[in-house]
Length: 369
Ligand SMILES: *Cc1c(COP(=O)(O)O)cnc(C)c1O
Image (tube, rainbow, N blue to C red; front, side, top):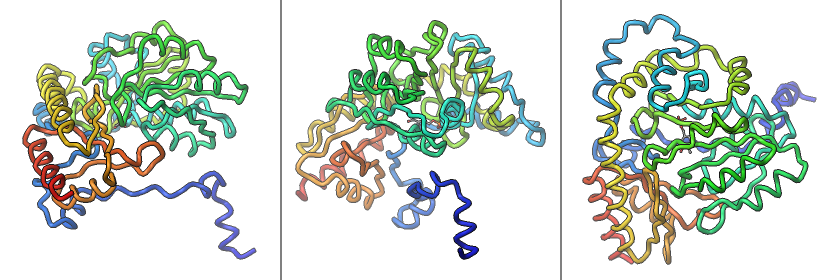
């Protein structure tokens, strides 16, 4: 065996077998490539908040004195403020470096190589990513044509004796914005597994089930500052857990997972919820405007959404081509080359002026048919 093969064989086999991550082109690189100044790019591809953070976040970051000190491993102040915000006792809350970190931690806590995790695609990609990274096996319970959960299929998988540990559900779901009913969640909580309910977009919808965690020992609710509070770049999320899960997670969490800047920004956001809610209301109003406007194009069939994006089926045209045509004019939307979504695009809700730019570009594309 050549030394090279020898060394290469040292890589964990599940990682050696993984497909490489499709890199996202950084915003400034993209701007150069398109020859369009960054401020003129209409970025509607990642569900970011077009209004950005609260102005108080910039003040808090400028005034923060402790950048040279390691952060509080318990995120005590942040969890206390989150307790106020959610109405849930701080002892049920863990803060993370984005909700993404908590997804990884939950998988690491429960999944031993060979165990299975139920995923309900089309949905957010990190559940599959973290499961496979940790040696688990993903079983898909595909959503129905209207993107609602196929609860029968989930129950069948969960009770088939395959060492199923976790069920990931997103509500509102990314990429379509549909929500899970109370009745279905109640039914799924009867299953002998951990139900992780990802509420990354709940502020645009309402009806959080965070307080259900107090009544269900197998429910975890994930939340984030990335979308409603405009802090995607600072990576702060949190989870609401039963106490018994918290006691284990605290053993495996990196001590300094939430950094000083992220924590200061999240605290400043929670002190300015009233202003941030004004932005949320603008986004929700703009979502309804965008939905009606998209319906006027005969090649688009948008789905009603409770989040800050709209998924649309593309009819009689190539969805990837539509995305590419918009990108040429500096308008970025999301196309997923995955089963069930190949004829769809997802458009994040921007400011009214960004909607206007998008609609004009769609008009031009529509005439070129
Ligand atoms: C954006 C998103 C997240 C990521 O949250 P971070 O806090 O930015 O890591 C989690 N879940 C879903 C469904 C998302 O769309």
